[in-house]
Image (tube, rainbow, N blue to C red; front, side):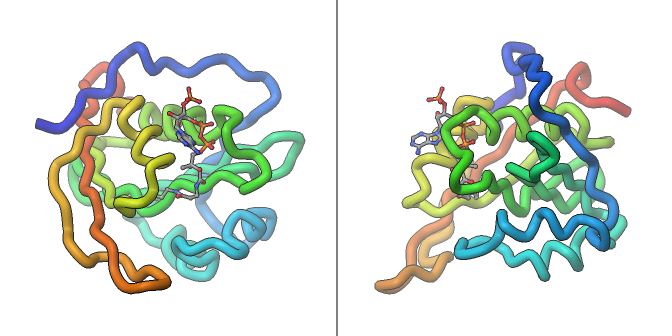
Length: 166
Ligand SMILES: CC(C)(COP(=O)(O)OP(=O)(O)OC[C@H]1O[C@@H](n2cnc3c(N)ncnc32)[C@H](O)[C@@H]1OP(=O)(O)O)[C@@H](O)C(=O)NCCC(=O)NCCS
């Protein structure tokens, strides 16, 4: 069974950050630094995604700088998390957890969130587990690596009715 998003994950007040809904990337070039020299989806890919009706996305601003962004593709009551990324120089400050938590609360009409993560990405897996995600499977040889392939760990989280803003 997928994990359950619990009320223990309520948003911690932080007046230094602002969560911004992404609806159109035309005016959000400030997101580009998040995707430079990284191995996840490219800025150009995400730019195409945000224009589509099934995409829900948010970024986290600190001092007007984008320090994190999260992207989902939604179908019915399920959402696939496409990417969560924190600016490299801003990691381990609670920003990834802050934006993930805020987005899980704001996702419209979604009851289950699914994601795939590299087996070697222990930082992301640890974050997801602290938020209640549970392992639901494994896809062998899913991601390319410098020396070959590595598996994807599949994780899911069930949102309770109380967590979902409709
Ligand atoms: C994964 C990522 C989003 C985490 O963001 P972050 O802002 O650094 O994480 P937080 O500071 O909010 O940490 C929250 C929890 O995640 C876990 N965590 C985060 N970074 C970790 C690390 N380097 N090692 C171990 N655990 C880590 C910890 O459980 C941490 O809780 P704690 O600080 O109480 O121990 C960030 O490292 C990142 O952007 N990585 C590159 C992109 C990526 O891999 N995205 C995931 C794609 S599926």
